[in-house]
Structure formats: structure tokens, C-alpha cells
Image (cartoon, rainbow, N blue to C red; front, side, top):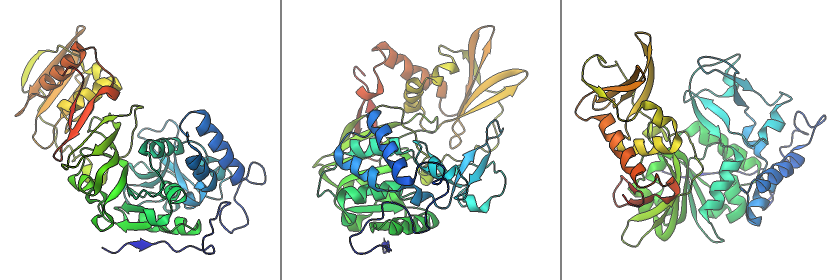
Length: 405
């Protein structure tokens, strides 16, 4: 596969720091211009401790985020059930200032729909976004890059994070892979408008890009169920991989791994309840027809389903059941929590009866038995925080343990 090369509109070596050539952006007359908004964003991110070093401060100060949102974004409709989205376009007076809020902005829905396609509201699920700048710069700081490092980015998205890395390291040091060709094309246009020309690839980011290997740093701006072997193989020994590990219960954590000479990798979580959209190949399967929930083996539950409302506890539960999805149902006048493995058909349903949690299970595995065992074992050693968990990757599936396990 041949890489795309962004075509800049500025002169050789120039960087566009004050936006496009349309004579300004909506909102500038009545409020701050984009340079002032960038300065305010830098101040906020520095004050919160997310932006910690001068090179990344310079990058955020220089890169105009609004250039990567020229096609607009979707805003969630307050109070809509189910969740609905409405477009905010460039001619909206709120557009420019919103581009510099520390917020994630949805840029694509249902895999193909962009803001310019919609008039009114849409209730489909988001599939691409411009991640909140605070999370992006926190991850870039945690990546611990240095001059001369070659970086592979999984998930180009709008191209904003790619531009920050280009500013910090230089275009030739940055390779970014995006699975969606239309998303990549829009990112290429925005990057070119700002004068950046990284190596842009359309393809499955989970396979990396071996033609540019080895990399000193690999960063994924999407959630992953596992750490693909290809990413480890394409990272030099001593190099760093930064990924967000997740499951289908949607508790996720940022992990920093070091690659070793023997082809393994190890590391720890960095904390902070990081959340990303899952990589598309890691989307959960459709639930299909629900099983007969009146069948199966019933018993009093040692732990109620409400324990997994807590982020850390849910992450531990997810280690026991990484391919399980949760559905909240109302049946016979009561609320039930269904945990279902759509691939194997195994399920567990929990509900309260006279102040006691009950569980009914069926299938080739007992999902809630495994969840209770994991959580009980973790609590028995003091429920250590996720930052103390250890991650070892010797195959595609990481082994995750906690102190005393």
C-alpha cells in the first residue's frame, strides 16, 4: 500500500498558525480570534497539569485546531432519548470558540455521515471524533518522545494530534494510519492547509505499517481489546507503545508498555479513566436475539450487579469477562442487568429480590461466577488501584495482574 503525502499550500518550510485564507472565522468579530483561543487553551491545559513540557506547549500554541474541524462537528441534543446529535457548521457563531474548548467533538456518525450531510437531528452512534485536546496532550506527554524519535500513530482521525507530532518531531518522523479513507482524506487536506506533510496511510492500524518500521514510539488514539503482535514487532527494543486497553463493559485504561529484545512487552496503567471509541475491528458483535432468561441456574449472588457501576471494579470484572456486553432490561416490573457473550451464548442476568441480589446463568461458562471470583480476589489484597496493575504481553492477549495476585 502506498502512503498518501499531504500537499501543503504554504511555502516551503512555512507553517500556517493563524488559520485558513478565508479572511477570518465566524465569531472573531465579537470574541477572541483563533490565536487568542489557542493561547487560552494552552493556559488551561498547563494549569491542569496535562501540558507539562515546553515542546508540546509550543505545538499546541502553533497548531490551529479549527483547521481540522472546517467540516463542522456534531453536538449532543440535550435531553434527547435515544441520544441525538445535531450539526454545528463553520458559519455558526459558536463554531470557532467550540473548536478550542477542551472537549471531544464528534465528526462522523454511523461510519459515513458527516455534519454537512444532516439537517436536523440524527440518533445513530458516533464513529469518529476530534479527541479533547487535554487527553491528546496528556497522551503525547506520556509517550515520552525525544528529538529524532520515529512515531507510528494508530487512528489519524481529524489529523490534529498528527499535526502536533509533526510540529514537535518533523513530518518525516510521523506515520499515521487511518482505516477510513474518507476520514484520512479530510485529515490530509487539513494537514496540508497547515503546511504539514506526514506519512499518511489508509489501512488497518492494528496491523501497523511495517514499511516504516522500526518505530521508537507507537500511540493508538482508539480503544483496543488487546495489543496486536504487529505493533510490538514494529517497535524497536526499548521503544514504547501507548494504548488504551478496553473491554465490552467499557471500562478502559491507558497503558504504557516497553518492548523487550525477546519480542515481549510489559508495563503498567497510567490511571485517569481514559476512554476512546473502540478500533472498528474490535467493535462488539450484534447481540442478536436475547436468550430465554427464565432458563438457567439460579442462586443468590455474592455480589450485586451494582458493583460494576464503579470504574475500577468494572475493569476487574472485565478481566474475567472481556467479551461480555451489558444490557439493562425491564421485565415483569423489575430492572434486570443482563451480561451476554454473544459469541458463545453464555449469559448471566441479575436482579434484586427483597433486598437480595439474585443471579441466573446459562451457557458454556458461568459469567457471574468468574466476575465474583475476580473481584473477591482483588478485594482480598486491598483492591489496589489500576496504576499498580502489571501488564505482560507475550502473545496477542495481554496478561494483567495486580500486586498479591
